[in-house]
Length: 402
Image 1 (cartoon, rainbow, N blue to C red):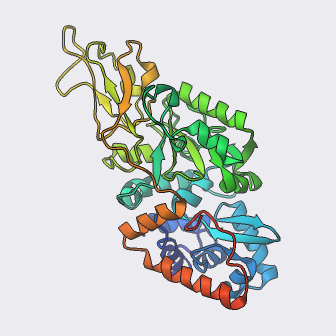
Image 2 (image 1 turned 90 degrees about the horizontal axis):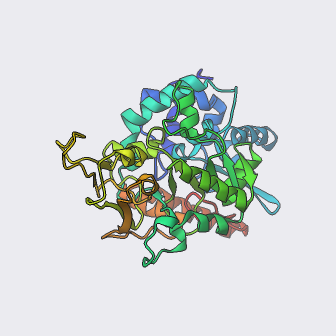
Image 3 (image 1 turned 180 degrees about the horizontal axis):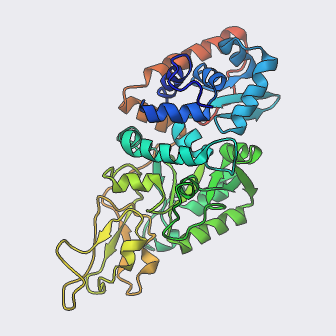
């Protein structure tokens, strides 16, 4: 590994290909080192030749010029490493190159492994995300992910749809699995632990076709609906924030996130206040009940609650806290910790409706980044290829189609 670092024959074409996704990867020396550790030279070449949609083995043979008997074990190895997703559908298997984020960066730390220098990758990924990637990930008007509200804190008179509720999303998914938290596992390799005591394993939920892939390839363990709901209950006891895809139809994951480990929540704290889609609610504080004890400060996962500027904890001071509406996700993780009953949820002034399907989300982000044309052209080419060859166009998969 690493022998092709900086090689224009492999790494640069791979970066160019990855940058056609809605969330690309900003080129830098650190990125090139990360990719050289994750992909060997042949894997990088294969990845660079992937189309923008799913592809069958014969299609990839044509694109790479690698014989089928030689290519298939390479694709199997890439799937085991979390670089590509394989999707059996009837008698055919479809392959999809995963994006960097959310994609193979996360899969790198979603199982225990000895094939990679995890300590070095943990340090590189932290520095890369902080120095180069935040603007690319959080910079579009439409966020890739959104927060979910704790249902028990929703005002009785409020109308709440099923896509806003984690429990309903799980019940409707059809298949689910639980695995490691990428963020906390990565921190372990930096000799750091979660301030809230959240576990590394058995805490991140995947759903649907993504969960089937993860369970099949050892990144997660299949769980029943009741077991998945129990994971949610455990997360709520730790005042974690539920985060999912920013779509209404068939979200593929529910992460249970904290302010100290989660890179999504860190982005909000870094100033990308709209980097995660907010719920239709906001936390408010009753100044008559609040005594400024500060317990909710630590519970909030985006540091949206604090004392007014200049106010201290001195006796006799007006010590009630305030919620910064621009930061508050409306998740409700803070509510249960307040022993004074001073915190509650109220409907937000603006209630954003997420895109319906993943393809709608990605098309919107690509339009905002002026990167839609390659997908349009690729889609036309695939449709024409399917028409002239009299073959079906393939299983619809969760990158740009639905």
